[in-house]
Image 1 (tube, rainbow, N blue to C red):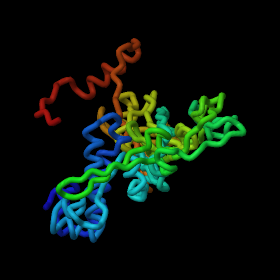
Image 2: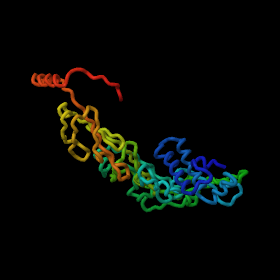
Image 3: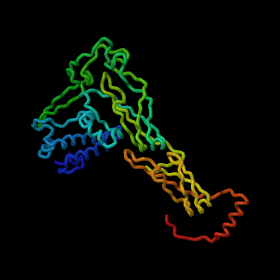
Image 4: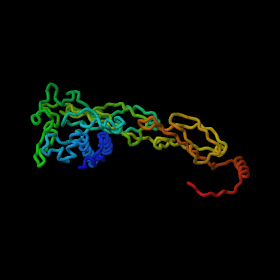
Length: 371
């Protein structure tokens, strides 16, 4: 009786809150936006949704604990079973779960209202935005130009020629779906599919619009403003709901999925929320110490080099790194000090270096290497 519990990784005594948190974790791991084209991940995602649908309902959970799957999927019981025909059923049923991950719509959360049953949703669009470290530090709003399917102006998205109207589909009688009932030893199994004649719309068009060919959508150029929060990194993405391609004949639009990619910086290397910069100094500066103007992502600041610093030593500028995503915490800037050995020296420099050599001595000192 522990199959659903095993899928979510919880015990049979888990509380409702623990089950919800466990489902969030599994759903995010196998979310289709994070695993495009991965059939195994999609199966795991649906499996987790089925488990959560049962275990989050007190009545279904009690019947499942007593009778197993037979207790929630027919077996002579009057209550309806658990059945998801497609991914949109899951997003519609548990939209609040996907919109409540702490990052809002970042990382592909799909929340929102329930879509009309069987109606074919518009396809998602995916784009990549390249960002500098300066933009990542402050956050930025980007205006992106794109081409997408939008409602046809000639028919206002209906797909029907001006002056005509779609009619109720004679196959599904306007419901947009057809049901097939099969009998088994465990009872009736109802299979719900989008109507093959109207493609889930509930209406058919006898006189299609000539501009869009009856689809109700045409490809147009447009733009969308994208607010990018501070602290994103390569591999992060966010979803703009309803900003993808519009569906045919008034069907709801898909989403716009924005992936982020960092541009290589001419000075800095990113290490998590820290940034690393190397500064080259001369031997006298290393011995005597000095104060330098050092570049940061937000401008120049003064950095004190202490006397006697060694080549390879790292100094820290606190709070001068990158912010942690959706947190009020910032990384540091690490400054690696490198003492430069000159390769070209003048006669005067040679004379001074000889004097320094006489002063310091030339006998090497051997020590155990400690990395």
